[in-house]
Every structure is written in C-alpha cells, then in structure tokens.
Image 1 (cartoon, rainbow, N blue to C red):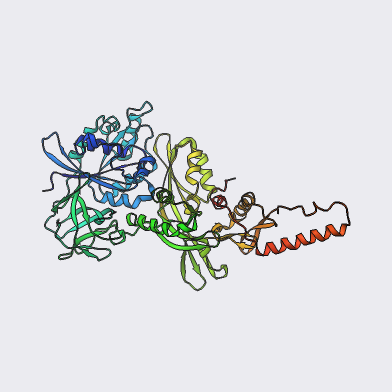
Image 2 (image 1 turned 180 degrees about the vertical axis):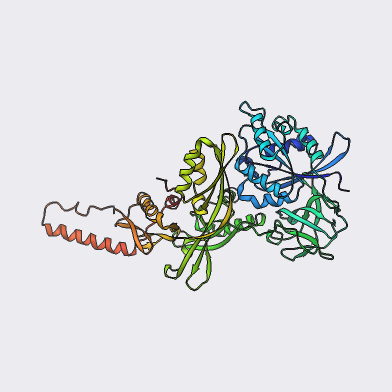
Length: 599
C-alpha cells in the first residue's frame, strides 16, 4: 500500500538554505545519528560545500511518526541548485508529488525561485512554501510571506517560518509534508515503469541509477530494459538510500531507490530514461526524456605537453559520472594537443575545471568559451560549428545562426536603468516586465548566448550591488551578420585567439585585443606585427618593437662605412630571423580574450 509513502523535493535559489533544511530533517527523523552528522550531509563533493551549491542530485529515505500516530516513509529528493542543471531539476520534480519551496527571509523571491516554482507547478506538484533564516537580524518574514502569498495564493499566515540552522519549527515542515502532499498512486499490478532521475558511477557496481518507481514493481532477479538505449541488464543489486546505499529484495510503486546496473558508462543509463521489465515491457516510456545538450564549448589543453594522456584519463573518469560532459581531441598550432569539450553552461565548465585541477592534480589551460553556431552553406547544407577554427570559407557561407536565450532578471527597482543599459549594449531585446513584489521588478529579455557566457553575470552583480538574480533558457537559433575575427602574429593566424563576433563589434573587439596583446607578447630580436583580420580585411595592427642589440658599441671613431657595414649585417640577420623565428605567445594572452574590459 502506498498510503504511507510521501515523495517530495526541496526547491530554492542558490544559498537559501536547501541543504541545511535537509540536514535538519535527517536529524529530526533519526535517519542519521548525531555522531555521523556533518553540515550539508547530502553534498558529498568538497566543491559543493565550498560553493554552497548542490551539483549532484541525491535521495534519502526517512521514517517519521506523525502526530496522527502513523509511521510514514518519506523520500527526499535533493535537486541541483544551479540554472545550468535545469534538466536534472525537471527530472527530480517528475519523481515527486510535492515540493518544499524555500525562500530566504532576508533575500525574498529570486529568479531561480520562480523558475523552479513554475517547473514544479507544471509537474502538478503540491507546493509547501517555507520561509527560512527568520533568526537573522535583517529577516523580513512578514514582507516575504506577503510576496509568496501574492505569487501562489497561499494565505500569508499559513506560510511556515523556520530557521533551518537552529532547527526552529522544522517539525512543522514534516507535518505539512505528511498532511498536504498526496500519496503516490498504487499501481503494482501494471507493467513496470521507473524514472531515472540521476545516476553516478561506482567502480565496483558500475553505474548506479537513482530511480522512482512510477508504476509496477521490480525484484532484484528481474531482467530490466532501458527505453532510450534498448539495453537489457540484470541488476547487480537494488536498494534504498538510508542515506547510504542499503540493498533490498524488491521496490514497489511509489518507492524511491537505486539499481546497480553493472554498466561501464553513464551513456547506457541516461537521466530521464524509463526502465521497464524485459519480459513484459510497458507500451511507452514516461514523457519528458531528452539528451542533455552542451551549450558552451571550450578547448582544454595541458600546460605540460606530457600530461596529455593523464588529461584524457581524467576527462574519461569525469564523464563516467557526468553524461552531459562531451569532449573530442583537437590540436592547435599555438597550444599543441588538447580536447574540445562541451558543457551545459559556464558554471558547469568552472566545476569541471576545478575538478580536473583538484582531483587529478593537472595544470590545464581553458581557451575562451564559445557557443555552437549553425552555418548554412550556399549548397543548402547546415553544419554546426563550436570552434571559430572550424568555420568554413566565407565565400561558401549563406548565413550563420547563433543561439538566443530567454533571460529573466529579478532586481530591486532602483537598478532598472543600469540593467537596461547592460543588456541593450549586449544586443539584448527587451520583452516585458512584471512586479512579483513591491520594490522588485522582473525583466524579461532575449539575448544571444555568446553575449552572456563570459562576464555578463559578474557585471550584472556589480551594477546591482549583488541584488539581481538571473535565470535563462534556450530560445532558438537566429541568423545574424556574424563573422570570424582572426588574430595574426607575424603573419600567422593563431587559432586559439580566433572568435566569432557580430559585424558591428568586430572593429572594437579587434582593436581592444590588439592593444592588450601588444602589452603581453614579449619583445623579440625583430619587429613582430600583430594584426586583427575580419571580413577579409585587416582591421587593426600594432607592432611589438624589437629589442635592439647595439652592434656599434665597439666602433669608436673610424670610417662611417664600417658602421654602415655592421648595421647592414644586423639588418640581414633580423630579416632571416623573422623568416624562421617563432613567437612564443604567453598564457596571459589567451586569458586576455576573456577579460576584454568593457568600455
């Protein structure tokens, strides 16, 4: 019977106290003994604890005896906290019947609070609003309760007010889950359909799929089938999270648990896929499955060329746990051998970079991130290009399309002007505005992804003193007048410094980059010309002056022809050097592309 099962997740903006609330619930239900308790118990990575963001979803089963004296099995599914992982959040929501919406009493409603709330409402979840951090001196619980009330219609006095850190009123949250969240449907008699809402790799048991049994039931002896990949397997073990992995013999409808598949890569067991029984398969999978699509691409190169094989191994290992990371080998004249990797977003890229450096102790260089463009050629074929170096010959291109995003910015009304200025400078198009609360405005824009992936978020935060919050979703590909900006050093194009830019920005970006490179490229024994080329012509040029050796030092007095002879000899030597010389480009130059100061 499923009457005593409750499945819920916690949704919140980054740093509103989601993981702390999960800790308190685990303590209250006695799932974790005081001795084993540590802060953010469900966040297993060091990075998650440092950045205060849940990166991997996790699940845990708790048992709670409610005020009505019944014992309930409560499954908490923890969702990732960053906008880059929106698809994983949507899968975790599909595995629940209820969601606890946590709002910080000092910050109020923010962009991701809204984005996650809309997803939860779309999934028909029962929303339990909770205001956290009421113990802080700057808390405004009454004001925030009114905002939540006007947003979702719950009366302000019914919004639960807690302090997850001190454990104040947390028991009310458990009671609300038991009373308000509906139990899952009892459907043991129909063919099995189980949703994979996350997975991780275990070196002994293979890929561990985190599942929610929607319909039917499964036993550890069943042969199971994946809908998307059509792969059959017999589980190594099945079990529940308590919060460690605990094997069980069977899982019924409505239950949350795991299946150790024995697969060697996450690609065979994708998040969002449906598992059914091979002997009596369900007629169709659960809706909503899609393969995660990388949005941001960057080159990863080892600083020491000898580390290339170690870098490949570390990327292979990271990919075992993270199916959304894609990579392929690439070579660059300037940087040697490396990989072109695809990420869900800039935060995802930062996480991967830190994990490579920390967990595998490698020194790596990331090139400037770029996005995936669609290039329509004159022959009618459409190719996708994620690196400026792959752009076909300009003569064969009919049009270049770039990805556009819908972005929502929530900010105090005082910063309306600076945000409008920032977004319109970045080719953004204003769509509409709403006022979710007094003194707060929600601004909706359309903007090219290439304009927001580098420093947009930092500039947004600095212009609004840290108050604005941002959420974004992919909109569509749109054609525009885009062209390749190439940097030539000594006449040779440097592929790692190339970029695809808008026609009207090419001149300014080229000039700024040349000015920057002039300071960074070390002086040689001959003049080095640095040029920016775009649209088939040179648009900017600077010379790095030669370091001059004084060959006349030994000539004191004597005939002028002796001096001329020595200078001519030096001139010929410099000319020969210039033909065979190789200009070493320092790493700072590649970082300069990222840090072109806005003027």
